[in-house]
Amino acid sequence: MPKYIYTAKSYDGQTKGGEVIARDEKALATQLRGDGFLVTSITQVKEEELAGRAKPNFLDIFNSVPLKEKMVFARNLSVMISSGLTVSRAVSNLALQVEHKGFKKILEDIFEEMQSGKTLSEGFAKYPGVFGDLFINMVRVGEVAGNLDEVLKIVAVQLEKEHNLKGKVKGAMIYPTVILAVMLVIGVLMLTYVLPQMLGVFKDMGAELPPMTKFLILISDTMRNNGLAVAIVFIGLVLFLRFFLGRESGKKALSYFTVHVPIFSPIVKQVNCARFARIFSSLLKSGVSSIEALKIISNTLSNYYYKQAFLLGAEEIQKGIPLSEILAKHQDIFPLLVSQIVQVGEETGKTDTVLIQLAEFYEDEVDQVTKNMSAIVEPILMVVIGGAVGFFAVAMLQPMYSMMGSIK
Image 1 (spheres, rainbow, N blue to C red):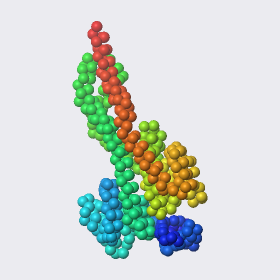
Image 2 (image 1 turned 180 degrees about the horizontal axis):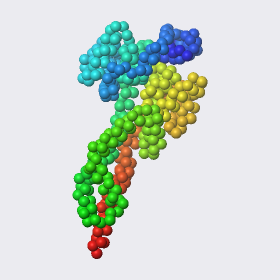
Image 3 (image 1 turned 45 degrees about the vertical axis):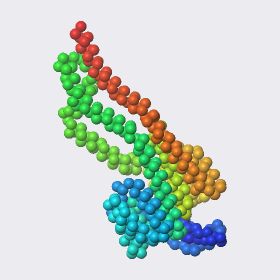
Image 4 (image 1 turned 90 degrees about the vertical axis):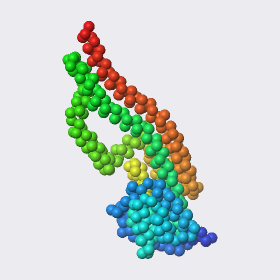
């Protein structure tokens, strides 16, 4: 079915706008009239426009721009527009203020597009990999409804929350990553410089070496005599993993691992549920239909199983199945609380409001988990480090005891 952008007014003068899928314009007008709104404009979204937004532009250079840049841009643009500046003038002013060269170039190009008669959303749509479906669709709906400044505030809040979530998760992973990296460096130094000198003594004495010591000697000799080959194999493995994880099968495997491994599972579910709740609420507030909102969310989240759940959900909603029932079918990735809260929102007609509360709940949960992450990870790291140190110690002590026994 075709997709339409509409604006409508209620009998008391309230303005409403958004994007919806309908059989035709007449059916959409009838639906809105049943909700107490009279249509003021309806525009069909052409398929070629949708296709154009779906493919990243090869000139897209925004990927290296921090998320914080987009957040600040959305907030400042909202303030300028609400202060009375035209959208094009506001974009031009912000382009002068931005320090990031790539972002500045994009804003200047968008300003030129607007000068030629295009809207802000059309300028954003030229860089779909830059602003993403969420940003583009919400701006487009805000332009149609005439509340672009309010929509941009919602976008800024969404980006701020997303920035905070990512920051907390990255911060929690710094400690274990540094420990493992240091442990790897020390291990390489031990195998290539320290152990060869100690193991050489055992070789010279001709003592029978235990299997663990022989294994260490094999690894040490391989790294010392074939260092280039080892480096090539390591780099090849890293490239293979990047290639594999870039394919659907790799993404599916990684997503399954993160969702089902006890250490990662709680925080992965909380982060994805928080992002879903806040993004879905923001889109509904902006006037985007539930079907289109789920499609946008599926393109925003990176976990394979969440993406598939929302894509299937968009199809099932068209058949009249409530979102709460759809989420309840995926209890392996959505806690029961999510479907229950959504059901309450559907029954009271305040889905966007209850989802904001749900998002705040899970964001607080993520905050607590990340704060306690070091306490959770430390015992595991201690076991790993202790196991490695114990292996080295046993491998070195066994031949010493053997030599002492032979001397007697």
